[in-house]
Image (cartoon, rainbow over all chains, first blue to last red):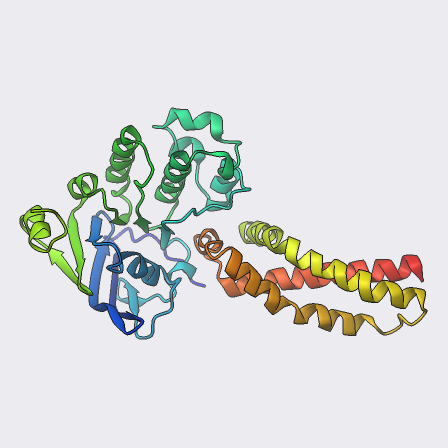
Length: 229
Length: 107
């Protein structure tokens, strides 16, 4: 297994293409090309069942797809999760084993928990609690923070704001803005009002195709039926 | 490397209830009677094979009951195959150790 050194010379570029997925004869993804670079937050929007999670899992390498190509700076990395320091992934479902304490989970992920939760003082008394003892919202927030602060070039987040209370959503969004200086983030979340202002680039998954939206993003989201007219 | 070992142990702990249960069943229902009946010589390789043959069942149960259990380990750069290889090796060693101890104590 090779190690992905952080490229001091310039941004790292994560690209995915050739991803075609069918479920029960229905083409979920076709002709997908997606690009994220360090220093960017990229938003991935789409209706329920449009294949957003499948796409993230395929890029992460957890889902084997024939002909899928995932590259970093032009070098093929499949499955990408095996490449140390390259990327991490927050799934929609709980990430951490419920029996693990927060402190131990952070140690395993190589994250400084004090630093990661510096803007969330209410999490401090919970460091020695098991993940299964945290509230759903706190567990979600902690998982997002741990992956955000982990030393990877990219983070793929599937609904990171789900279940997190509004005041924490704002601070988490600020953390993302701050940390994008050293990593690239690919985020999918239905809370578009929070996601859109964060994004440097927005993609929409629509009828199996991935469309890059430029210009008036909200207007286009309405045109494609993602937002109500 | 230490992180991988710790993660491997954590994963084994989650699969241990199935694996140790099967070990207990084989040791209690097969090895113990054969020790008392004085025919336990040379039985360990066959028991180990029987034990290893149950690994796919444990894997299937684990996949069905905890489909999302791998995400954390993937984030530690560890694949499914590596997790199960480690768990089966550790479980096999524990099984052999327990069988050997039982025979040494009861024969």
